[in-house]
Image 1 (tube, rainbow, N blue to C red):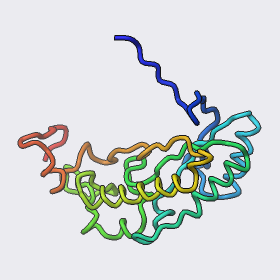
Image 2: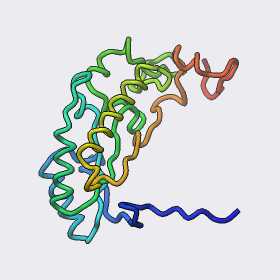
Image 3: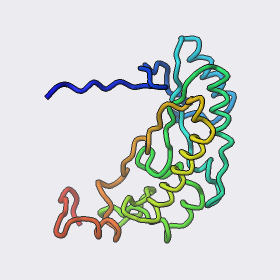
Length: 196
């Protein structure tokens, strides 16, 4: 079988993204506008062409069904002003194996948005990947974000890629042992890493 050539393209032309990820001192993507501005300028100084930066679910949907794309539009404007491209990271349901970046209306409703239950029965600060409400809420927010980017950026193509669910996982358990996880697991399947 012949080798497949995979070439990243922008506007149908090969493009080599060169730049960096905008991180603050804690290792998280910067939210502060002044910090973002200085980061974009730093990428320009090293002759980069792309900034990788997070979009936060809790910022774009602070109330259920009420979207605010101010932060996204400011990033688009900053990237265009500095002649840089964007690779967006979707910080949402499972960033770093926890639910830090989900909106408050999700965090405060564990009856509707189920959490992962550890093997010892402890409810973790992680949304269950098997709970339909969790998946559908994230899916709706991400889809709405993509529609907004398409409407605002289809001509200029400032956004050249989006990473979905940056660094997903479950901190504190190898899987969900709650009702959602147990229903999804094959009958009789059990990891015996921890005593039950």
